[in-house]
Image (cartoon, rainbow, N blue to C red; front, top):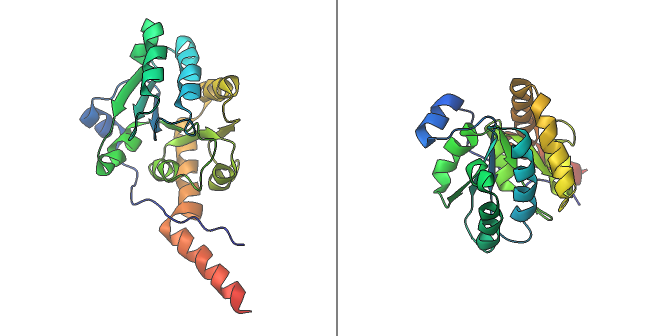
Length: 207
């Protein structure tokens, strides 16, 4: 069995200030969630942890883009319970895929709460734009990030573990971490990297 990711990203880094201006995104730092609001993607763990983090890091903002809304009611209930939370977590909803490049470039971090993923194309696309991944410690995400070459991993479903990861972002060198993320994408997740790995697999089978 040979592991080769099945898709990549056509997105690329752009000027962050321009992207934020175009989308009217504010906050510092800016975190982004992209995915379905379902149990596997686990937005409730992400929102619970972020609410606690935002109370300790004024200005931190999480934007949530979602294509389905199974758990939207539960998310809104959590935000309605805390007035301050509604200002730190922004529910964007569905956006066209082509618009995601601007969102990825506007954000500093991409967050995922997934318990299982075949790969994680949203994370891949975010990494291609330099979004530092704060994602769950699952097999596919470990493979995508090194592990350890970029970003931070945490135990799925563990609010405290994600909170600790979020706290570590306060002392990050963002320019350095973003550059490491783009380099990881280029060497492991880009179309060129996929073609190279596929060629290596095919060559090895001919022996």
